[in-house]
Image (cartoon, rainbow, N blue to C red; front, side):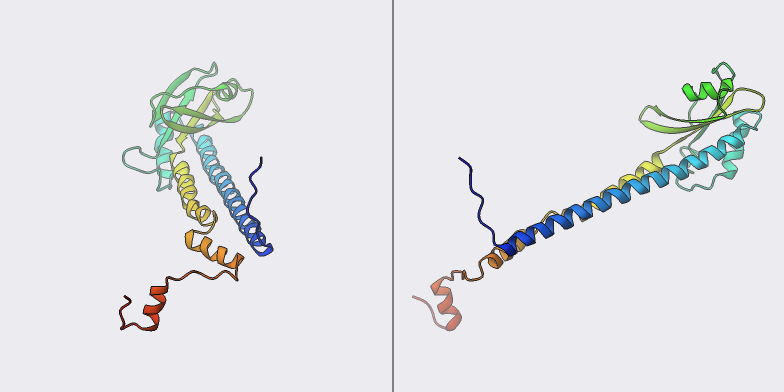
Length: 215
């Protein structure tokens, strides 16, 4: 046997529908803006790495490439004393074997796209690799003398920014969940405007005669 839901007035139903529609709209807008921001941040991040890979491909060694990129890098979030600028430059020969590396990570995995660039099949490529708990985005470019260069950077700064944006939107979602106890009480009174609130007789007497005691 089904439990019957309490009958709501037309006004109450419209109120519930309006609150639900606003909540869905706010969540949809928040999610869309977060996804757009995510795509934009990673697009800028990858564009910078791609430019770095083109510069590093013309360098004589990973150390020289890293020194050049350090002077060109202006990202304040990654320039922290403990991790330099968060970059790793690695040279790969035509067979796909790493030959030298410099930067934050001592050695870097050579993925499928890096092997294709090193072999001359494609001119550029990109990969995402995870080392320990850190996620690195990698851009690969062909070197004029043969082989390829990998330029990798920890994407921690972008991830922290996206996490902060997600936490900032939580209060917005909470405000759209519905009214609190006081709001629900007002809604019940709106549904039954003829229902009067019961008042204790002794309290009514005190309100009329504040200086008399009620025996």
